Amino acid sequence: MPNKTEVLTQIPLFSGLGEAEVQALAQRAIEKRYTAEEILFWEGEPCAGIFLIAEGTVKIFKTSASGREMMLALETAPSTVAELPLFDGGPYPASVRAIDPVLAYFIHKADFYQVCRQYPDLALKVLAVVGRRLRHLVSVVESMTFGSVTQRLARLLVDAGRQAHGNQFELPLTHQELASRLGTVREVVSRNLARFRAEGLIKIEDRKVTILDRASLEREAEAQL
Image (cartoon, rainbow, N blue to C red; front, side):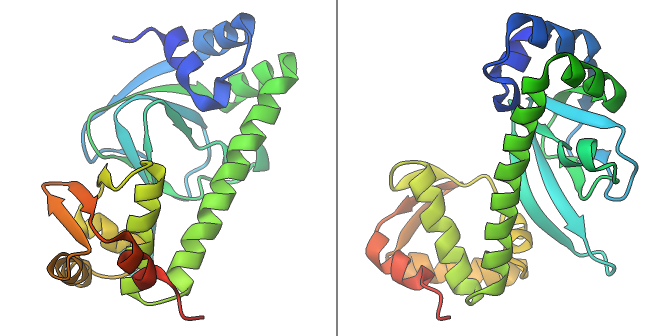
C-alpha cells in the first residue's frame, strides 16, 4: 500500500509544499477504497471534504433530469476531486464514480481549513487547480456547443494526440463514455469512428489509436461557426 506522505507529494495540488505542510495533511487523511462503478459522492450532496485519488481513475459527471449522463472529466491518480465546494460552501456540483478499483484519501473540510490557515500557500495551490478545472469546463462547453458530432469527435482525437505528443495514444474512454463526453449516443460515435477508419484517417487496435492522416483529421475538426 502506498505511503500517504509519498502520495500527497505526487499530487499536483500539493506539489511544492514543504514537509511540514504535507505531514499536516497526511495526518488528517482517511483511507477509503472503492470498487469499480462505486460512487464516491453524488451531485447535490453537501460537501464533506476533498478526495485525494491515490490509485485508479474516477469519472466526474453530471446527470440530467431524464437520467442521461454527461461526462465532464476523467481523473487518474495522483489527482484530487471536490476542490471547488471546499471554498464556496455549496454542495458537490457533480457526481464522481470509480472507473476501476480506487484508493482515495479523504480530508474533511474542517481539517483542510485548519491546514490552510496554518499554511496559506496551500489555498493558493487549490485556487490554481480550480482555475485549471474552469478552463477545462469552458472547453467542454465549447465542444458541446460548436460544430457537429463529427467535428467534436475529430477535435477530441486531435487534442488527445497533442497531449500524447505524437500520433499514437491510448483512448481511455469506451464508445459510450465518448458519447457522454460529446453529448450524443454511442451509435453515432461508433459510426463516425468507423468512417474515420474507412477513410484512412485513424487506426484503432483495442483502445490504441493511431492518427494516420493528421491534416485530414484536423480539417474534420474545424467547426463551421
